[in-house]
Image (cartoon, rainbow, N blue to C red; front, side, top):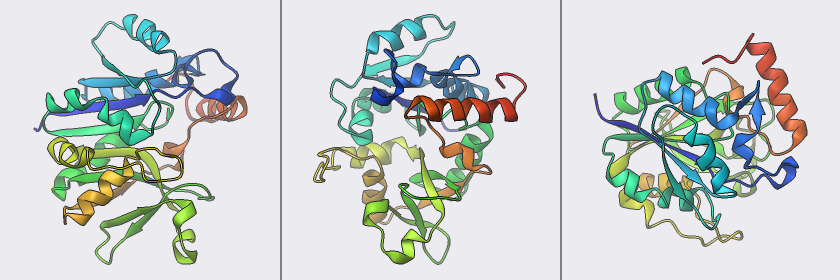
Length: 252
């Protein structure tokens, strides 16, 4: 069994959450969203975990200090995109060969079954990168999953860059990815910030691997809930409503 590790992106400020703490510490069923993600990983025996902290990093540090198992952390002092966040964890990647899953810390319904299902496909196809996708009723704003004739991933096309045919695709990027750690490290420094936001985007790493002819896949989650996060109190309330309908209590 190859070594498995995880990086959780938890640097977001969540300016619209009307909270004085990092967004990932907002609670769903009385548990921080970050804890949902950590527990989904640990339930899948993925216990080498690095959390990328940013806004109010001391809150993340204080929370992790309450856990009875070790979690690594790194600090992203400037929030310059998901690719930049992973760059901050380069030392962690270098010390954890094998496969790494990168997840958003504000996606509480990214469950163990989905994470391990994506890993199975990733291994079966000897893939350099496997994005976790979901089929959603309204894909507006999401990156679309474009597949080739063989069903392999050929592109992740952002909504703003999509043509008419791509806009009709309802399979979208969840923001969760499996990578071969060494393949990811080989392209991480090649990601550029040549875009309107001046940020480094992790999907660009997948494009670089595709351009190199590496195998890339997309694993569709059973439930569209896998893509859900919260950017404001109303969306957080919606996540809590969904969780109450799905679970009698916190599931892990």
